[in-house]
Image 1: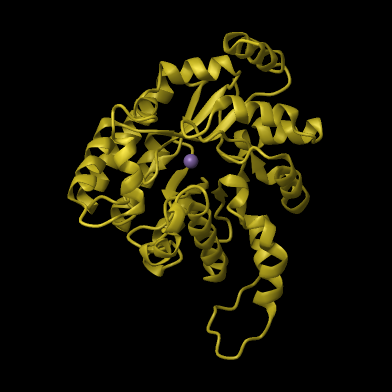
Image 2 (image 1 turned 45 degrees about the vertical axis):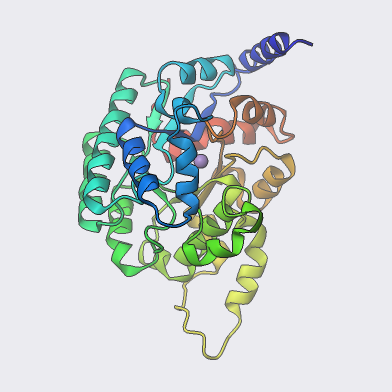
Length: 354
Ligand code: MN
């Protein structure tokens, strides 16, 4: 079969299933020239290897594989979505957002990014929704931008790309940010970036510090520290979304509960009201981004329930076709597939129904 015919066959199979499911993709990246420029400057001034700037060096290259796709919202992207029957992209500024910039630049680029996202959604309200970017490194300004992005721009949640300058959201100086997000009753998507420098060093051999393993190790640790740091006793209604089938957390629930429950003399962990797995089932959602794999999906449905799982592609880093074919063919009930393809996303991100 020629590539052309194969694409045509995919298209018709995707379209024929549109009657059953709205396909809402919940972790889709875009960029703006202002973010590209700030990151290009950081790449240019870097004195030593930085795993995220290593990737930004590729992303900011106009001849590279993702540069044009990241900057495009209305051409290639909508064509791809139409071709594979994808109804909605829930967009967010690509990782690392503004978290590597100095606080002033971060606040400036976040504001522009959120305005641009708002405009895109106004232009295509049935095709786009979005998560706001905030200058995490400056909590008072971050809170102002959360208020503006949710109240005025009507964005659908907040995205934070794991650590900021090596620090996690479980540290108390960031709690006001979490309080503001909880107060607005919108979800916080914790998206990966490369591990903090201390951890990244151990992954350098064979370049394991990126999406192959390091992202998951970094973001899984971040999600876990929010639990073990007692953050979710302070903010019991906070809802956090993790990509990549939960960044390894669902697989580890038994051992987290078992080990956390043991009395350890000399351990100064905060006392928690619930077991780690109870927080995961109460406060976390996961998405299928970049993990187009049936056994993991069925496992996650069994441990977390289909109500806590949403579909995602991870465009432009991964392709529409793989994510659509995976979910269309997944051997799960039709009811669960509806929840994962669209119902949960509509509820969690308060998306308008077309
Ligand atoms: Mn992603």
